[in-house]
Amino acid sequence: MQLTALEKQLSFLREIDRLKTVIRQSPLLDQSRRENSAEHSWHLAMYALILSEHARGPVNTNRVIQMLLLHDVVEIDVGDFPIHGGSSSELQAEQESRAAARLFGLLPEPQRKEFLSLWQEFEHAETEDAKFAKALDRFQPLLINIFTGGGTWTENGVSLEQVFSRYGPVIKRGAPELWAVCERWVSQHFSGQAAGIPKQAD
Amino acid sequence: MQLTALEKQLSFLREIDRLKTVIRQSPLLDQSRRENSAEHSWHLAMYALILSEHARGPVNTNRVIQMLLLHDVVEIDVGDFPIHGGSSSELQAEQESRAAARLFGLLPEPQRKEFLSLWQEFEHAETEDAKFAKALDRFQPLLINIFTGGGTWTENGVSLEQVFSRYGPVIKRGAPELWAVCERWVSQHFSGQAAGIPKQAD
Image (cartoon, rainbow over all chains, first blue to last red; front, side):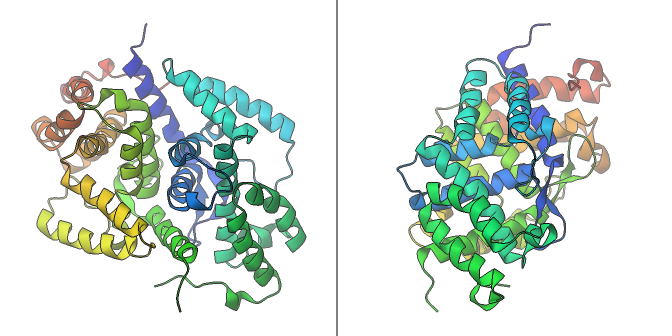
């Protein structure tokens, strides 16, 4: 049966509903449960909308938003690879490429090609837009850990040095002003001076 | 204490984490639980990204995406008002306006003004962008009901006529081609001819 362009589009939008069931390591800020990848993607798009003035290079905010909206859809097939999980990045990249081909392949042309290319741009992290998007994708979970008194760092026995090496280069490369805030809060967290970290308003 | 612009921005991004705990009436497509408003907002932004060629008027896809990303943040203060709930729309509008003032008021200028105005544009539904955004906000839950064999319609004893009157005008106004699909599937659903509705690929 030949599907129309609209039928293909609806089939894709239906399929990506599954991203709401992919569970990440990070908790919500109220610590009631772990975050899923769909709501994480929404939050990152909001980060891009609000924080693009802090990007290192000139960025197109709307392209960054689009990139972040779709950057995690591959997890529908392969799941989330946690930053502190130590998985093989080569195997991960191969699995994610296959997932991207299948998922974006549900779309009609030229959308298939367009969104696959935007996803690849994010993965390669070479353009200013992609570097900023990658920086936000590290910055948001770092803030969760700061605002929940340790979060996945405590769970995984992660040290100050490991936080600096796992998050620092990516955030600094795309958004040095945001990394400056991270450095201060991370240092305060690990030195037990949590009083310097802002509280959430009630 | 005087907050910097960046501190205000982070305070807003932290506050809106709560949208992940606002539960809607609609289930996920796998019916494992109900959808929350953050992941719903992500899904709607994806609808806008994929379907904007089906808008009735000329739309700016990126503005529609921005509008849909932030259209529900007011629910952090007032909760979700279900389409089949029969609540007073005047009271709802007043509560949502106060919530918008408080939440966008966490942002520095000019962002406070800019996003408040974008939210108001969505609410008033007079521009082509807002009409299309509103149409998608009705279209997505309608599809959920279709793809889950009735969903909130069955729960609330909603008839074919009620579906047509509660969803039809808004979807038709912003995206007549999408309403044409709805009309066919809704009719098939209520006449017990579900065989005409596509199955999800495994």
